[in-house]
Length: 295
Length: 292
Image 1 (cartoon, each protein chain N blue to C red):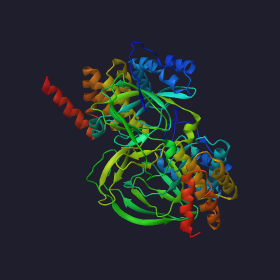
Image 2 (cartoon, each protein chain N blue to C red; image 1 turned 45 degrees about the horizontal axis):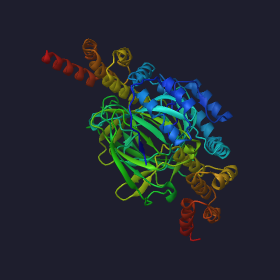
Image 3 (cartoon, rainbow over the protein chains, first blue to last red; image 1 turned 180 degrees about the vertical axis):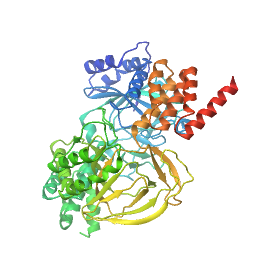
Image 4 (cartoon, rainbow over the protein chains, first blue to last red; image 1 turned 30 degrees about the vertical axis):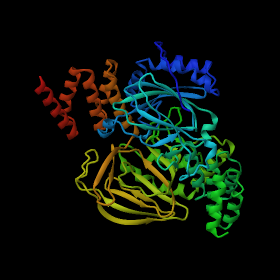
């Protein structure tokens, strides 16, 4: 389950000290090692000028450098295989007044993450979150699919709270805090993150409802699908390679779709090949396409 | 997951032209736009149409997409310069070239705070409705009472180019079949993107046209809440920003840091070019006076 990490510290470290510490002391492949770094993340969160100094710099430069594509995130630093950012959690009043847009971290929408991360409360009363878990190996990964979700806990994530979220296993839904809140997160960038999906869930119907469009794999899928509208023989060969070998199942399915779009007379043959894909997501979609073709 | 490396989601960056998919044709377009287009005179953008048409005839989009497929085959985990349903091809100092898939209709009719030339690629035409912006429309002054006027429909076929006359019209694209579209666009010259209801044609809301404006407004609010004197100088630099909402966010944040400086800024803001700022400044000063 998502792991609440008890403890506190009076220590204060800079972002540079934190990045050095993680780079030299933490094995990012080992969950225990990451969790053991929580006291240092708390020490970073004790640095009361951390966000201030970064924001002052960003404002002076009019956000011309070192920014991320969100107004709700403040990039703080990165090392090999991880990065650190602050997340802004507006209150309902902040959103209503237009002071902070709710652009990236949708409240009231249950979701998992395709990466593991360690998070600590930095400022404000903190959001309330309900945490569930699911077994990623038990799902095909299509919108509308039923998912076994097990409720774990409900937590108010205030200053000093620390938690570790497991990639593609913990699902949480967050509710707006009573007042503006900030967390500091260390995100773990394993290579598989680029290939793995993130999902939204409907807790009432216990179904998977979709994928964030900004997700790496969603953007890759859209590029592959676009090739289906303007490709040539070379593109078709590349799509065939992707359909056979790409490790992401949604990318393979998109490659089959693009191929069928490019080569309508070969559609039945393409979907018959897709029926033999190792992942049910691809194979079942291919069966439906074949049925629709009357093949 | 959003890449942690320094980046900016605005399609147009203040840096030398970055040709993401190098080819002679794209380089020629970049050269033509650099030569013909002056950001301070947005109308000069239309001088680039011939160069854009030449590019369209070159099959650049198929080449760019094929290059992307090759990179994914070579490195399955690679993430390119991709937005959802959009491939960036060229980022100039004040313009951008991209290929986009129009797949689902938008819920609202959006104004385009930039000039653009859109050209469908492939066999599907691009259908659109055009609406005239109200006579008293001022981009920086959102007014929910304003309504669009229908101004006809059109179809753009492969080989044709639709010019987006964004100062006069808003466009609503029909998407019955997905359409691949080449887009050559300028940097925003308006601070706001307005959204209109498709049913009533009334103005619904307005968003910042540039992410950096939103980032600055949020940063000002945070700095006000963190309330440290070191933020005073950065916030003062924001009070001359072209976007009125950024200027006002800075003044509000200064109000949490220094009463003296806030009063000085409010006095100055009574002469702000934006009427909402002038009104808000005068109202705030009156409230402050009544409390003392």
